[in-house]
Image 1 (cartoon, rainbow, N blue to C red):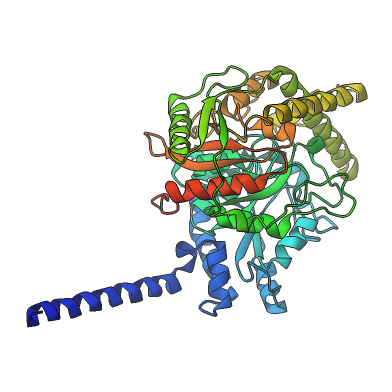
Image 2: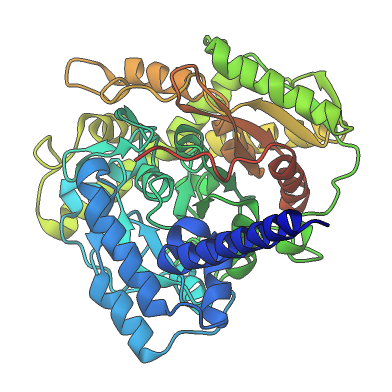
Length: 501
Protein backbone atom coordinates (compact mmCIF):
# COMPACT_ATOMS: atom_id res chain seq x y z
CA UNK A 1 0.00 0.00 0.00
CA UNK A 2 1.39 3.43 -0.92
CA UNK A 3 1.57 6.30 1.55
CA UNK A 4 -1.22 8.01 -0.39
CA UNK A 5 -3.39 4.87 -0.17
CA UNK A 6 -2.57 4.59 3.52
CA UNK A 7 -3.54 8.22 4.14
CA UNK A 8 -6.77 7.72 2.16
CA UNK A 9 -7.55 4.67 4.25
CA UNK A 10 -6.97 6.61 7.45
CA UNK A 11 -9.11 9.46 6.13
CA UNK A 12 -11.94 7.11 5.20
CA UNK A 13 -11.79 5.52 8.64
CA UNK A 14 -11.90 8.97 10.20
CA UNK A 15 -14.93 9.89 8.11
CA UNK A 16 -16.69 6.67 9.13
CA UNK A 17 -15.89 7.44 12.75
CA UNK A 18 -17.15 11.01 12.35
CA UNK A 19 -20.31 9.75 10.68
CA UNK A 20 -20.91 7.30 13.52
CA UNK A 21 -20.29 10.02 16.08
CA UNK A 22 -22.61 12.37 14.22
CA UNK A 23 -25.31 9.72 14.12
CA UNK A 24 -24.89 9.07 17.84
CA UNK A 25 -25.00 12.81 18.53
CA UNK A 26 -28.13 13.16 16.39
CA UNK A 27 -29.71 10.28 18.28
CA UNK A 28 -28.96 11.99 21.58
CA UNK A 29 -30.13 15.42 20.44
CA UNK A 30 -33.26 14.17 18.66
CA UNK A 31 -34.18 10.76 20.08
CA UNK A 32 -37.88 11.21 19.23
CA UNK A 33 -37.05 11.47 15.55
CA UNK A 34 -34.60 8.57 15.48
CA UNK A 35 -36.31 5.78 17.44
CA UNK A 36 -39.56 3.92 17.84
CA UNK A 37 -41.07 3.52 21.32
CA UNK A 38 -39.09 0.40 22.16
CA UNK A 39 -35.96 2.18 20.98
CA UNK A 40 -36.68 5.15 23.25
CA UNK A 41 -37.23 2.80 26.19
CA UNK A 42 -33.85 1.18 25.46
CA UNK A 43 -32.17 4.61 25.57
CA UNK A 44 -33.78 5.23 28.97
CA UNK A 45 -32.62 1.85 30.30
CA UNK A 46 -29.08 2.58 29.15
CA UNK A 47 -29.32 6.06 30.73
CA UNK A 48 -28.50 7.68 27.41
CA UNK A 49 -31.58 9.87 27.83
CA UNK A 50 -33.88 10.52 30.78
CA UNK A 51 -37.68 10.32 30.96
CA UNK A 52 -37.72 14.05 31.71
CA UNK A 53 -35.76 14.78 28.54
CA UNK A 54 -38.13 12.65 26.45
CA UNK A 55 -41.19 14.28 27.97
CA UNK A 56 -39.75 17.76 27.43
CA UNK A 57 -39.00 16.87 23.80
CA UNK A 58 -42.55 15.57 23.23
CA UNK A 59 -44.06 18.65 24.84
CA UNK A 60 -41.84 20.95 22.78
CA UNK A 61 -42.87 19.17 19.59
CA UNK A 62 -46.52 19.38 20.62
CA UNK A 63 -46.31 23.11 21.24
CA UNK A 64 -44.51 23.67 17.94
CA UNK A 65 -46.72 21.49 15.73
CA UNK A 66 -50.19 21.51 17.28
CA UNK A 67 -51.02 25.01 15.96
CA UNK A 68 -50.50 23.65 12.44
CA UNK A 69 -52.23 20.28 12.73
CA UNK A 70 -54.53 20.56 15.79
CA UNK A 71 -54.14 17.09 17.30
CA UNK A 72 -54.26 17.87 21.04
CA UNK A 73 -57.57 18.00 22.91
CA UNK A 74 -56.19 17.99 26.47
CA UNK A 75 -52.76 18.97 27.78
CA UNK A 76 -51.80 16.95 30.84
CA UNK A 77 -48.20 18.08 31.04
CA UNK A 78 -48.17 18.39 34.82
CA UNK A 79 -49.67 14.92 35.16
CA UNK A 80 -46.80 13.49 33.10
CA UNK A 81 -44.17 15.38 35.09
CA UNK A 82 -45.69 14.20 38.36
CA UNK A 83 -45.67 10.60 37.15
CA UNK A 84 -41.94 10.80 36.51
CA UNK A 85 -41.28 12.53 39.84
CA UNK A 86 -43.25 9.86 41.70
CA UNK A 87 -41.31 7.03 40.04
CA UNK A 88 -42.27 5.15 36.89
CA UNK A 89 -43.06 1.47 36.60
CA UNK A 90 -40.14 -0.45 35.15
CA UNK A 91 -42.05 -1.90 32.24
CA UNK A 92 -41.09 -2.36 28.59
CA UNK A 93 -41.81 1.32 27.81
CA UNK A 94 -40.53 2.98 30.96
CA UNK A 95 -40.03 6.71 30.34
CA UNK A 96 -41.65 6.84 26.88
CA UNK A 97 -44.21 9.66 26.33
CA UNK A 98 -47.79 8.63 25.51
CA UNK A 99 -51.00 10.30 24.38
CA UNK A 100 -54.44 8.91 25.15
CA UNK A 101 -57.37 9.36 22.82
CA UNK A 102 -59.97 11.75 24.26
CA UNK A 103 -62.82 9.25 23.96
CA UNK A 104 -64.20 7.12 26.80
CA UNK A 105 -60.74 6.56 28.23
CA UNK A 106 -60.45 7.93 31.72
CA UNK A 107 -58.01 9.27 34.26
CA UNK A 108 -60.03 9.99 37.39
CA UNK A 109 -60.46 13.73 37.91
CA UNK A 110 -59.03 14.79 34.54
CA UNK A 111 -61.32 15.88 31.69
CA UNK A 112 -62.53 13.52 28.99
CA UNK A 113 -64.67 15.50 26.55
CA UNK A 114 -65.29 12.99 23.72
CA UNK A 115 -64.96 15.75 21.10
CA UNK A 116 -68.34 17.10 22.18
CA UNK A 117 -69.69 20.34 23.61
CA UNK A 118 -72.12 18.15 25.55
CA UNK A 119 -69.18 16.71 27.52
CA UNK A 120 -67.26 19.95 27.99
CA UNK A 121 -65.15 19.64 31.17
CA UNK A 122 -66.60 16.22 32.03
CA UNK A 123 -64.40 14.69 34.73
CA UNK A 124 -64.84 10.96 35.38
CA UNK A 125 -64.54 9.45 38.83
CA UNK A 126 -62.82 6.28 37.59
CA UNK A 127 -59.55 5.43 35.85
CA UNK A 128 -59.75 3.04 32.91
CA UNK A 129 -58.15 -0.39 33.28
CA UNK A 130 -56.33 0.28 30.00
CA UNK A 131 -54.76 3.41 31.50
CA UNK A 132 -53.55 1.38 34.47
CA UNK A 133 -51.92 -1.14 32.13
CA UNK A 134 -50.38 1.61 29.99
CA UNK A 135 -48.84 3.15 33.09
CA UNK A 136 -47.67 -0.24 34.40
CA UNK A 137 -45.83 -0.59 31.09
CA UNK A 138 -43.96 2.60 32.01
CA UNK A 139 -45.54 5.03 29.53
CA UNK A 140 -45.74 8.69 30.57
CA UNK A 141 -49.17 10.12 29.71
CA UNK A 142 -49.01 13.83 28.92
CA UNK A 143 -52.21 14.58 27.01
CA UNK A 144 -55.21 13.46 25.00
CA UNK A 145 -55.74 13.60 21.26
CA UNK A 146 -58.59 15.05 19.23
CA UNK A 147 -61.57 13.02 18.02
CA UNK A 148 -64.78 13.67 16.07
CA UNK A 149 -67.80 13.98 18.33
CA UNK A 150 -68.25 10.62 20.13
CA UNK A 151 -65.95 9.02 17.54
CA UNK A 152 -68.78 8.77 15.03
CA UNK A 153 -67.08 9.84 11.80
CA UNK A 154 -64.14 8.93 9.59
CA UNK A 155 -62.73 12.45 9.83
CA UNK A 156 -61.56 14.30 12.93
CA UNK A 157 -63.56 17.51 12.67
CA UNK A 158 -65.77 18.86 15.45
CA UNK A 159 -67.17 22.09 16.87
CA UNK A 160 -65.37 21.76 20.21
CA UNK A 161 -61.72 21.49 19.12
CA UNK A 162 -61.95 22.25 15.38
CA UNK A 163 -60.41 20.42 12.43
CA UNK A 164 -57.42 18.10 12.75
CA UNK A 165 -55.16 18.39 9.71
CA UNK A 166 -52.97 15.84 7.98
CA UNK A 167 -49.19 16.39 8.33
CA UNK A 168 -48.77 15.14 4.75
CA UNK A 169 -51.03 17.94 3.49
CA UNK A 170 -52.94 20.16 5.93
CA UNK A 171 -55.83 20.57 3.48
CA UNK A 172 -56.64 16.87 3.89
CA UNK A 173 -58.18 14.81 6.67
CA UNK A 174 -56.30 12.59 9.09
CA UNK A 175 -59.17 10.12 9.16
CA UNK A 176 -61.20 9.28 12.22
CA UNK A 177 -61.95 8.73 14.83
CA UNK A 178 -58.32 8.39 16.00
CA UNK A 179 -57.25 11.25 13.75
CA UNK A 180 -55.54 13.26 16.46
CA UNK A 181 -53.43 10.29 17.49
CA UNK A 182 -52.42 9.59 13.88
CA UNK A 183 -51.56 13.25 13.23
CA UNK A 184 -49.34 13.38 16.33
CA UNK A 185 -47.45 10.22 15.36
CA UNK A 186 -47.16 11.18 11.69
CA UNK A 187 -45.85 14.62 12.67
CA UNK A 188 -43.13 13.02 14.80
CA UNK A 189 -44.37 14.19 18.18
CA UNK A 190 -44.03 10.61 19.45
CA UNK A 191 -43.65 7.19 17.82
CA UNK A 192 -46.95 5.62 18.98
CA UNK A 193 -50.25 6.71 20.52
CA UNK A 194 -53.48 5.24 21.86
CA UNK A 195 -56.31 4.70 19.36
CA UNK A 196 -59.71 2.99 19.28
CA UNK A 197 -61.68 1.32 16.49
CA UNK A 198 -65.47 0.86 16.26
CA UNK A 199 -65.76 0.78 12.47
CA UNK A 200 -62.24 1.47 11.25
CA UNK A 201 -61.08 4.21 13.60
CA UNK A 202 -57.54 2.82 13.97
CA UNK A 203 -57.11 1.69 10.37
CA UNK A 204 -58.66 4.74 8.65
CA UNK A 205 -56.25 7.24 10.29
CA UNK A 206 -53.33 4.84 9.85
CA UNK A 207 -54.09 4.71 6.12
CA UNK A 208 -54.53 8.50 5.84
CA UNK A 209 -51.33 9.29 7.75
CA UNK A 210 -48.93 6.57 6.57
CA UNK A 211 -48.81 4.55 9.80
CA UNK A 212 -49.20 0.97 10.94
CA UNK A 213 -52.57 0.43 12.60
CA UNK A 214 -53.81 -2.89 13.97
CA UNK A 215 -57.35 -3.39 15.25
CA UNK A 216 -57.23 -6.30 17.74
CA UNK A 217 -59.77 -9.07 18.12
CA UNK A 218 -62.92 -8.32 20.08
CA UNK A 219 -62.25 -8.82 23.78
CA UNK A 220 -58.47 -8.59 23.44
CA UNK A 221 -57.94 -5.21 25.21
CA UNK A 222 -59.94 -3.91 28.21
CA UNK A 223 -62.70 -1.36 27.58
CA UNK A 224 -63.77 -0.52 31.14
CA UNK A 225 -64.69 0.39 33.75
CA UNK A 226 -67.54 1.06 34.02
CA UNK A 227 -68.40 -0.76 30.77
CA UNK A 228 -66.47 -3.69 29.35
CA UNK A 229 -68.02 -3.47 25.88
CA UNK A 230 -68.50 -0.61 23.42
CA UNK A 231 -71.26 -0.34 20.80
CA UNK A 232 -72.39 -3.91 21.37
CA UNK A 233 -68.88 -5.29 20.87
CA UNK A 234 -68.00 -3.34 17.74
CA UNK A 235 -65.39 -1.15 19.44
CA UNK A 236 -61.86 -2.05 20.57
CA UNK A 237 -58.75 -0.25 21.88
CA UNK A 238 -55.14 -0.34 20.72
CA UNK A 239 -52.71 2.07 19.00
CA UNK A 240 -51.29 3.65 15.88
CA UNK A 241 -47.53 3.22 15.49
CA UNK A 242 -44.64 3.76 13.11
CA UNK A 243 -43.17 0.28 13.66
CA UNK A 244 -44.75 -3.16 13.74
CA UNK A 245 -42.79 -4.22 16.81
CA UNK A 246 -44.15 -1.28 18.85
CA UNK A 247 -47.70 -2.35 18.03
CA UNK A 248 -46.95 -5.92 19.10
CA UNK A 249 -45.23 -4.93 22.35
CA UNK A 250 -48.01 -2.49 23.26
CA UNK A 251 -50.57 -5.23 22.72
CA UNK A 252 -48.52 -7.54 24.97
CA UNK A 253 -48.63 -4.88 27.69
CA UNK A 254 -52.37 -4.21 27.46
CA UNK A 255 -54.08 -7.44 26.37
CA UNK A 256 -55.99 -9.83 28.60
CA UNK A 257 -59.36 -10.03 30.37
CA UNK A 258 -60.43 -7.32 32.78
CA UNK A 259 -62.55 -7.73 35.91
CA UNK A 260 -66.21 -8.18 35.01
CA UNK A 261 -65.70 -8.70 31.29
CA UNK A 262 -68.29 -10.87 29.55
CA UNK A 263 -65.72 -12.43 27.24
CA UNK A 264 -62.06 -12.29 26.27
CA UNK A 265 -60.04 -13.19 23.17
CA UNK A 266 -58.02 -16.42 23.40
CA UNK A 267 -54.79 -16.07 25.37
CA UNK A 268 -51.82 -16.13 22.96
CA UNK A 269 -49.35 -19.02 23.27
CA UNK A 270 -46.38 -16.63 22.95
CA UNK A 271 -45.85 -12.90 23.15
CA UNK A 272 -46.94 -10.87 20.15
CA UNK A 273 -43.53 -9.19 20.07
CA UNK A 274 -41.88 -12.58 19.62
CA UNK A 275 -43.88 -13.07 16.40
CA UNK A 276 -42.39 -10.02 14.65
CA UNK A 277 -39.52 -11.36 12.57
CA UNK A 278 -40.80 -14.93 12.50
CA UNK A 279 -41.60 -16.38 9.09
CA UNK A 280 -45.39 -16.54 8.62
CA UNK A 281 -45.22 -19.63 6.42
CA UNK A 282 -46.94 -19.88 3.06
CA UNK A 283 -50.24 -18.10 3.59
CA UNK A 284 -53.46 -18.53 1.64
CA UNK A 285 -54.57 -14.96 0.90
CA UNK A 286 -57.99 -13.95 -0.45
CA UNK A 287 -57.76 -10.73 -2.49
CA UNK A 288 -60.84 -8.49 -2.35
CA UNK A 289 -60.78 -5.48 -4.67
CA UNK A 290 -64.46 -4.57 -4.96
CA UNK A 291 -66.21 -2.75 -2.15
CA UNK A 292 -68.57 -5.19 -0.40
CA UNK A 293 -71.58 -2.88 -0.89
CA UNK A 294 -70.69 -2.05 -4.48
CA UNK A 295 -69.52 1.55 -4.09
CA UNK A 296 -66.70 2.69 -6.39
CA UNK A 297 -63.10 2.31 -5.22
CA UNK A 298 -60.42 4.76 -6.33
CA UNK A 299 -58.06 3.20 -8.89
CA UNK A 300 -54.99 4.13 -6.81
CA UNK A 301 -56.38 2.22 -3.81
CA UNK A 302 -57.14 -0.77 -6.02
CA UNK A 303 -53.64 -0.65 -7.50
CA UNK A 304 -52.12 -0.41 -3.98
CA UNK A 305 -53.91 -3.64 -3.05
CA UNK A 306 -52.84 -5.31 -6.31
CA UNK A 307 -49.24 -4.27 -5.70
CA UNK A 308 -49.43 -5.65 -2.15
CA UNK A 309 -50.80 -8.90 -3.58
CA UNK A 310 -47.84 -9.11 -5.96
CA UNK A 311 -45.47 -8.44 -3.07
CA UNK A 312 -47.10 -11.21 -1.04
CA UNK A 313 -46.85 -13.60 -3.98
CA UNK A 314 -43.15 -12.76 -4.36
CA UNK A 315 -42.71 -13.67 -0.68
CA UNK A 316 -44.11 -17.13 -1.36
CA UNK A 317 -47.77 -16.68 -0.41
CA UNK A 318 -50.67 -17.98 -2.50
CA UNK A 319 -52.97 -15.11 -3.52
CA UNK A 320 -56.26 -15.41 -5.37
CA UNK A 321 -59.36 -13.26 -5.74
CA UNK A 322 -62.10 -14.52 -3.42
CA UNK A 323 -64.63 -13.01 -1.02
CA UNK A 324 -66.98 -14.31 1.69
CA UNK A 325 -70.68 -14.27 0.86
CA UNK A 326 -72.04 -11.77 3.38
CA UNK A 327 -75.29 -9.81 3.46
CA UNK A 328 -73.58 -6.43 3.69
CA UNK A 329 -76.83 -4.45 3.65
CA UNK A 330 -78.20 -6.42 6.61
CA UNK A 331 -74.90 -6.14 8.46
CA UNK A 332 -74.72 -2.38 7.89
CA UNK A 333 -78.27 -1.92 9.11
CA UNK A 334 -77.51 -4.03 12.18
CA UNK A 335 -74.45 -1.96 13.07
CA UNK A 336 -76.51 1.23 12.82
CA UNK A 337 -79.01 -0.28 15.27
CA UNK A 338 -76.25 -1.10 17.77
CA UNK A 339 -74.52 2.27 17.43
CA UNK A 340 -77.68 4.37 17.22
CA UNK A 341 -79.31 2.83 20.27
CA UNK A 342 -76.06 3.18 22.25
CA UNK A 343 -75.65 6.84 21.29
CA UNK A 344 -79.31 7.65 21.99
CA UNK A 345 -79.14 6.05 25.44
CA UNK A 346 -75.86 7.81 26.32
CA UNK A 347 -77.19 11.23 25.26
CA UNK A 348 -80.39 10.73 27.23
CA UNK A 349 -78.33 9.85 30.30
CA UNK A 350 -76.07 12.86 29.76
CA UNK A 351 -79.07 15.16 29.44
CA UNK A 352 -80.48 13.78 32.69
CA UNK A 353 -77.17 14.21 34.50
CA UNK A 354 -76.58 17.79 33.32
CA UNK A 355 -80.11 19.11 33.00
CA UNK A 356 -79.21 20.28 29.49
CA UNK A 357 -81.58 19.26 26.72
CA UNK A 358 -80.43 17.35 23.65
CA UNK A 359 -80.24 19.95 20.86
CA UNK A 360 -78.09 21.41 18.11
CA UNK A 361 -76.66 23.76 20.73
CA UNK A 362 -74.68 20.91 22.29
CA UNK A 363 -74.62 18.15 19.66
CA UNK A 364 -73.60 18.05 16.01
CA UNK A 365 -75.80 16.92 13.09
CA UNK A 366 -74.28 13.44 12.79
CA UNK A 367 -74.79 12.75 16.49
CA UNK A 368 -78.34 14.09 16.37
CA UNK A 369 -78.96 11.78 13.42
CA UNK A 370 -77.81 8.77 15.44
CA UNK A 371 -79.91 9.92 18.43
CA UNK A 372 -83.03 10.27 16.29
CA UNK A 373 -82.46 6.87 14.72
CA UNK A 374 -81.66 5.20 18.04
CA UNK A 375 -84.75 6.56 19.74
CA UNK A 376 -86.88 4.56 17.30
CA UNK A 377 -85.04 1.27 17.88
CA UNK A 378 -86.82 -1.39 19.93
CA UNK A 379 -85.40 -4.11 22.12
CA UNK A 380 -86.34 -6.67 19.47
CA UNK A 381 -84.50 -4.60 16.85
CA UNK A 382 -81.38 -4.71 19.02
CA UNK A 383 -81.67 -8.48 19.52
CA UNK A 384 -82.13 -9.10 15.80
CA UNK A 385 -79.18 -6.84 14.95
CA UNK A 386 -77.01 -8.76 17.38
CA UNK A 387 -78.15 -12.04 15.84
CA UNK A 388 -77.38 -10.76 12.33
CA UNK A 389 -73.80 -9.93 13.25
CA UNK A 390 -73.30 -13.23 15.08
CA UNK A 391 -74.45 -15.09 11.96
CA UNK A 392 -72.04 -13.01 9.86
CA UNK A 393 -69.18 -13.94 12.19
CA UNK A 394 -69.99 -17.64 11.66
CA UNK A 395 -70.01 -17.17 7.87
CA UNK A 396 -66.68 -15.37 8.04
CA UNK A 397 -65.14 -18.08 10.23
CA UNK A 398 -66.22 -20.70 7.69
CA UNK A 399 -64.64 -18.69 4.86
CA UNK A 400 -61.42 -18.36 6.83
CA UNK A 401 -61.15 -22.09 7.22
CA UNK A 402 -59.98 -21.89 3.60
CA UNK A 403 -57.97 -18.64 3.75
CA UNK A 404 -55.53 -17.37 6.35
CA UNK A 405 -55.83 -13.68 5.49
CA UNK A 406 -58.10 -11.37 3.50
CA UNK A 407 -56.27 -8.60 1.60
CA UNK A 408 -58.07 -5.46 0.43
CA UNK A 409 -57.64 -1.71 0.17
CA UNK A 410 -58.07 -0.06 3.57
CA UNK A 411 -60.17 2.80 2.15
CA UNK A 412 -62.19 3.63 -0.93
CA UNK A 413 -60.00 6.64 -1.72
CA UNK A 414 -56.83 8.45 -0.63
CA UNK A 415 -57.33 11.02 2.17
CA UNK A 416 -60.14 13.42 1.27
CA UNK A 417 -60.06 17.16 1.74
CA UNK A 418 -61.42 18.57 4.98
CA UNK A 419 -65.17 19.13 4.91
CA UNK A 420 -66.00 16.45 2.34
CA UNK A 421 -67.55 13.77 4.57
CA UNK A 422 -68.79 15.63 7.61
CA UNK A 423 -72.53 16.33 7.83
CA UNK A 424 -73.80 19.83 7.18
CA UNK A 425 -77.34 20.76 8.28
CA UNK A 426 -78.66 20.50 4.72
CA UNK A 427 -77.56 16.86 4.23
CA UNK A 428 -79.80 14.17 5.69
CA UNK A 429 -78.54 11.35 7.87
CA UNK A 430 -79.04 8.58 5.30
CA UNK A 431 -77.07 10.52 2.67
CA UNK A 432 -74.22 11.01 5.12
CA UNK A 433 -74.22 7.29 5.90
CA UNK A 434 -73.83 6.45 2.21
CA UNK A 435 -71.03 9.00 1.80
CA UNK A 436 -69.15 7.74 4.86
CA UNK A 437 -69.55 4.10 3.81
CA UNK A 438 -68.19 4.86 0.33
CA UNK A 439 -65.05 6.37 1.85
CA UNK A 440 -64.49 3.40 4.18
CA UNK A 441 -66.26 0.39 2.65
CA UNK A 442 -63.84 -2.32 3.81
CA UNK A 443 -63.02 -1.65 7.46
CA UNK A 444 -66.34 -2.23 9.24
CA UNK A 445 -66.57 -5.96 8.51
CA UNK A 446 -63.78 -6.70 11.01
CA UNK A 447 -65.69 -4.84 13.73
CA UNK A 448 -68.94 -6.61 12.90
CA UNK A 449 -67.33 -10.06 13.05
CA UNK A 450 -64.80 -9.32 15.80
CA UNK A 451 -61.70 -10.16 13.79
CA UNK A 452 -58.26 -8.56 13.92
CA UNK A 453 -57.26 -6.43 10.94
CA UNK A 454 -54.36 -4.14 10.14
CA UNK A 455 -53.70 -1.25 7.78
CA UNK A 456 -50.14 -1.39 6.46
CA UNK A 457 -48.59 1.76 4.89
CA UNK A 458 -47.41 0.22 1.64
CA UNK A 459 -48.36 2.86 -0.94
CA UNK A 460 -48.47 6.57 -1.79
CA UNK A 461 -50.90 8.35 -4.11
CA UNK A 462 -49.83 10.37 -7.14
CA UNK A 463 -50.58 13.47 -5.04
CA UNK A 464 -48.10 12.37 -2.37
CA UNK A 465 -50.64 11.16 0.19
CA UNK A 466 -50.44 7.81 2.02
CA UNK A 467 -52.55 4.82 1.01
CA UNK A 468 -52.94 1.87 3.36
CA UNK A 469 -53.56 -1.76 2.49
CA UNK A 470 -55.66 -3.89 4.85
CA UNK A 471 -55.09 -7.48 5.97
CA UNK A 472 -57.76 -9.24 8.04
CA UNK A 473 -56.98 -12.38 10.04
CA UNK A 474 -58.89 -15.04 11.93
CA UNK A 475 -60.47 -14.18 15.26
CA UNK A 476 -57.89 -14.35 18.03
CA UNK A 477 -54.94 -14.75 15.67
CA UNK A 478 -53.16 -11.40 15.84
CA UNK A 479 -49.93 -13.43 16.01
CA UNK A 480 -50.20 -14.39 12.35
CA UNK A 481 -50.86 -10.77 11.35
CA UNK A 482 -47.78 -9.62 13.25
CA UNK A 483 -45.66 -12.27 11.51
CA UNK A 484 -46.93 -11.11 8.12
CA UNK A 485 -46.58 -7.44 9.03
CA UNK A 486 -42.98 -7.96 10.10
CA UNK A 487 -42.25 -9.68 6.81
CA UNK A 488 -43.84 -6.83 4.83
CA UNK A 489 -42.03 -4.20 6.88
CA UNK A 490 -38.72 -5.85 6.04
CA UNK A 491 -39.56 -6.32 2.36
CA UNK A 492 -40.99 -2.82 1.78
CA UNK A 493 -39.76 -0.57 4.63
CA UNK A 494 -41.79 2.52 5.43
CA UNK A 495 -40.00 3.83 8.54
CA UNK A 496 -38.17 6.62 6.75
CA UNK A 497 -41.16 7.72 4.68
CA UNK A 498 -42.34 10.76 6.59
CA UNK A 499 -44.03 14.06 5.76
CA UNK A 500 -41.76 17.02 5.06
CA UNK A 501 -42.63 19.40 7.88
